[in-house]
Image (spheres, rainbow, N blue to C red):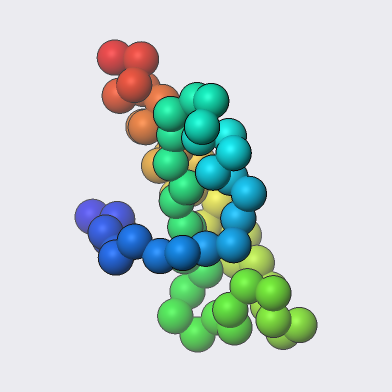
Length: 66
């Protein structure tokens, strides 16, 4: 219920080099609506999202191996 599909964006990651060799995806795990954006000096990672992110990625792996 927490997954939202967004429009494709042109991020500045080098992750695409990995995807040339192995299929995959880049997913953004939210930090809360009141959080400053990543790379902002006031950004503070919300540790409460770790179980959500871990569950999300484990379900992707289970579906791929299923």
